[in-house]
Length: 328
Image (cartoon, rainbow, N blue to C red; front, side, top):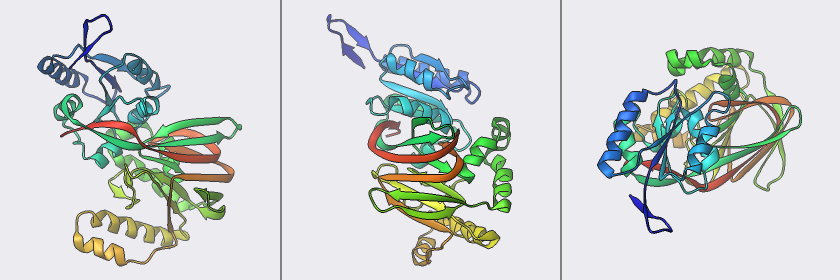
């Protein structure tokens, strides 16, 4: 692909590659990128390594400044989130090369896991899909306000504790099994917190919950379907509040999540799920904006990255703001 300059010369397209150095087979990725460059006549790609301090935000900013035709993101959900935070609404597509633990965005979009060459080919020659982006504004424990985008989900409670207390080494060697210990610890303690919340411009409600998740996608780590109604390009946020009463409540949550996971593969189980009564331990709401305040600070995570303790959160949706390159 070539673009004319103002002086009459021609500028060839180039790709930018933002990569997590500890999570990707770098030489394999580089070889696949160079093969596509030669086949299509593109200029040499530009490479940007992420750093642990910002999950890849600075690398994404450098990549965007070079005006690439596509930004290839090689890493996990946290790296994809950091790049999306910078480039959404720019019109420049991103192309995930999933190499993390959850890879939840890739799973939701049907992007193959482990097919490095196929995913890189899609980055150069695939079609583009517009997906929604969530934007979370929150106040931390010191009263400072921050704003960050996410593409999968924002979590307060168990989900955030998993992000905060599960080490990268454990995730690298154990995969999603690394989350078993923090999940078990949180279930045993079963500490609920109070929150006042509002969906869109409806009245403020109060409840107690163990975990609150605002989802753009509906699947958790371990391929558990938490929010069956979540669609990544429907212009809505889907919120689930877990509020179990003791271990029996957790058993009911586990049973429902298992049924929801099976329902994706079986017509019979989908009919069973449709007829199953709602359970108090799982409360679902949907809207374009979700606001909540907490009596005490609680941890928050965005796409698996911890952002510390917050006392207030306001989450909105930007429909179709992120362009994602997928296989044709």
